[in-house]
Image (cartoon, rainbow over all chains, first blue to last red; front, side, top):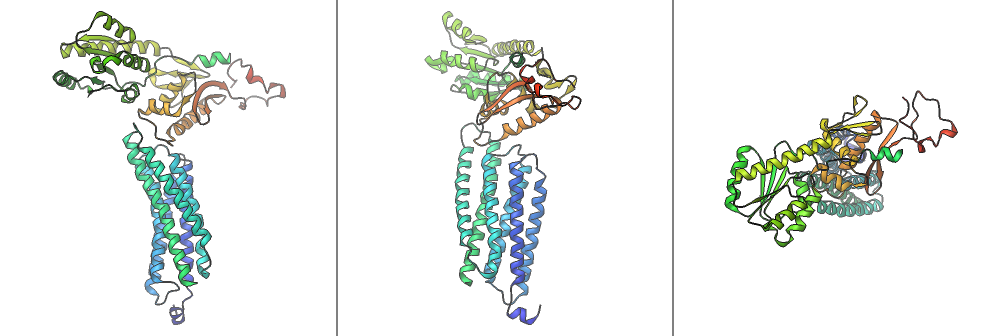
Length: 207
Length: 277
């Protein structure tokens, strides 16, 4: 890295890594959506989601490594760090859902979980489309508004799904398993909103 | 003929098979008697649950009991309608009434409603256990008598005692849960709601949105289709549940058969036997 790049950074590496993270987030959410909508026929997709989780860790590591190597960053260091963490959280929660479906020996999906995975997938599509716009600090409001709307829908679904678990006479094992899984799905959807808020912050600060 | 083939399957016992260890529910408030009875049941290795108030028939279904012992005094004046609903909902459950002194008319009324035996307190716990065992034996004999002849539906032969279905001599390879679902839908000539199937097979209420029944019916269908490709057995009623009716699959063309001629397209409406191999 030359002195010019250190003093007047183009930030190409950061933006390229964020775009990779966006594609990775979208791939993980797409795989989870496919896995749940066809569950239990395509359980093996959990191992592909695990690959995404490793890839997410690699990208986060590279971003932090760059951050430690660079004196001047194209955007606030704090924002880079927070956005990397939020994107990583999405993949982590997604991978946990896929993994716990196997660990908890879930035999069949819940319709609400399938709907939540679809919401997560759509939210990740918005993130993957918004991240390249960060290069020119372009307007991403249409994406963040949609992500917020999806997050609200996810919250409503989670509450309904949780309430349904506490109807009379339901197997306590079903309650334990699905309460945990719903919380993780909600965590993944919430993480997409965190990422959207950070992206919005970056654009506002740098326009 | 089609109606005949779909009617053949209607038969016999409705409750899921009881667990290998007998499970007894005792609805009684007599603490001392319950204590001595519980000790003797423990010695025999029986599972038992003492309850101090009446349990709904739906809850009894979920408990998957081997027998029920009930003091009708606990239920009060509603005891007759309660006994009737329990005996109607769970015809294969042995029910023994163990209560204080009663009139002949009361005992006759209880027995006519479907109670298996009426024991008057005070009684020895060993005597009560023997009466329960006798009632269980009687029910088992009745079940075996009913279950002995295999159920034939389409190309399927359902052997309840083996917990398996066969096409010819070849096993369909059903798991225990798949077989329980098949046995349940086979015994019914109406559409069974998903919730009903779940409650009977899993023994719990179905959570809203749970796709377990759909997943297991899908697996069951795949196995049935592989073993008996010319037939459709389980039909979906969207938004409701499933119905069992063995019907030849009109879209099925055996690899050994020539391509169907136009005049043969309605042949499935006048069914004359299973498709040729």
